[in-house]
Image 1 (tube, helix red, strand yellow):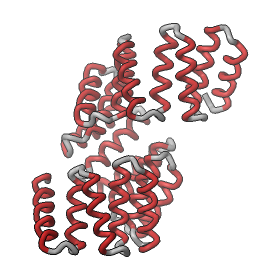
Image 2: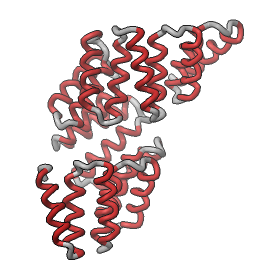
Image 3: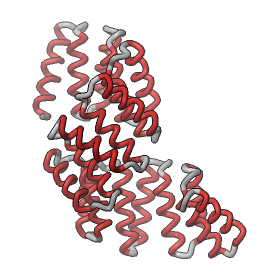
Image 4: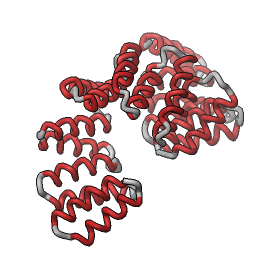
Length: 326
């Protein structure tokens, strides 16, 4: 497929050299650059398309998706909003906006956008996949699996949908099904880092830790900025008692995403085990600062306070964790 994208880029570049105002060639080159992972080049091409045709909704929608890939969610949402303003029937813009809302944890908004996309075009596999992600994140695994099933029915080679269904099965404790789906995702897309990470997590939960570390390493090899893979690998090393290596992985995750509460919780847990309760409390507090509804962080900070002899603060934290359902 990469050869096909290279061909498109070459042909479009030749056309643009002859006719610098050929908006379709900029649009097509942007599409190819996006799928090659050249997001800055894609943004430049879609921006040129918009300059030549400011009313082309799809160009805004596609540029928004490129901004999303770069983690610039504010610009991504602005582009989707503009696309929908120009064309309220643009199902792709609602689908893409659902992706970004999932990425920022706004799952209700993600669901609303996926629902609208499916209402406009019931054949968009990506919209069902996105809706499944949102349901999975709010704890509705059975509904999530139904969405992934539909995505796969519409697009049987949709690797990400198999991988995401595997995540949902894992959360239901159905680890063999999770691994089967991850295997299928890897067969379809051997460079899909998320599938290796998912399979590694399922193997960890099954107690197959040697298989798990191989998958986490592969996920990081394919995507050296994969925060969750570093966290999972850190948890593997922590379970082995290799706290130095685990701490290095958690610090790498925080370096990549300073607002990842789970990384701070994981660091706190290691310091708690090692008897460094002040550092444990510091990290749990950071996790709570990022996610004030993080019950486990309150509970574990309570344990650290208790071990330090600060019973008042410990009981306060235990109380908050209990209020949140832990």
